[in-house]
Amino acid sequence: MWQVVGHKWAVDLLNRALASGRVGHAYLLTGPPQIGKKSLALNFAQALNCLDEERPCGQCLACRKIAHGSHPDVQLIEGEGGSLKIDQMRTLQHEAALSPLEGRWKVYIIRQMEQATAEAANCLLKTLEEPPAHVILLLTASQADALLPTIVSRCQVLNLRPLANETVQRALQERWGVDAERARFLARLSGGRLGWAVAASQNDTILARREKHLDEMMELLSQGQVERLGYAQQLSRNPEAAPELLHLWLSWWRDLLLAASDSSAGIINIDREDALRAQAQRYSLGQVRDFVEALRAAAWRLEHNANTRLTLEVLTLSLPTTNW
Ligand SMILES: [Zn+2]
Image (cartoon, rainbow, N blue to C red):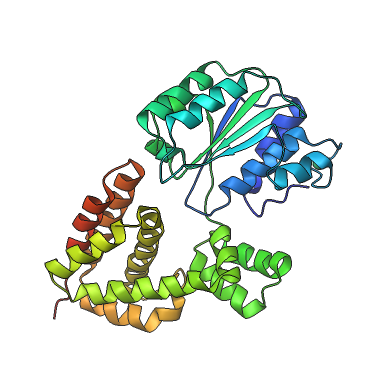
């Protein structure tokens, strides 16, 4: 049984590859943060190395070892200090050449490939160009276009989309025991990102940080250049938190577009609907659209290893000022 919530088409596709014995050597899973890319990759690694007939069974020694991160043939490779380094790829290259110790396949899950340095990406490319027969590479990234085209072209790309709110809500209730009302609220705030919703249900600081970041953004709107640059500088001390902050801001400004059109169906920040409606009166549609574009551009630059401080400075300066 696959333990993946949603993303059924992707599970079906991988299952068909397993059943036909035609598994690709490299897959690239793309999608927003905390949408389920790593879970899908780990489940696929279990399916590849499971000892049972019904793969993945989730119960056998191989499945359990993979779930606990202790299977010698399944490696999870993550950035160190915000970047994937060439040493990590060199180690992969050397180890990949050896035969599996316990499983059928050696599986390498490389997270947030957009964080790879140019040297690291080029080193991985060598393994991708001539992968040993027993090796499967599972890359994850926010978007395919944040990576070298030569890497993307050697992977089968699976673009995961946000789940329906109802799917997130049901999973929170049934699998994580969250009560219905809280599950509905968190599902809405998650924007279809189950990983975020689960984390927020288990850790109150995530919601508290969201509150703080939204309050700070409101304050920033009425502040001048000096305060904005100061805030950008303060944020850039923690570059790993920047993508989530941008995601939150983007959800807010998209919500403003919905609030301006009098629709509340798709609004994510539903607990602040009154503030959204009040703010929607204060800005022109053009201003809101321009800032949504500025946010997208900033997110794109960060994914392409731009300087965090500079990107956030440009962004905070382009926050629209109120019209009164
Ligand atoms: Zn198993």
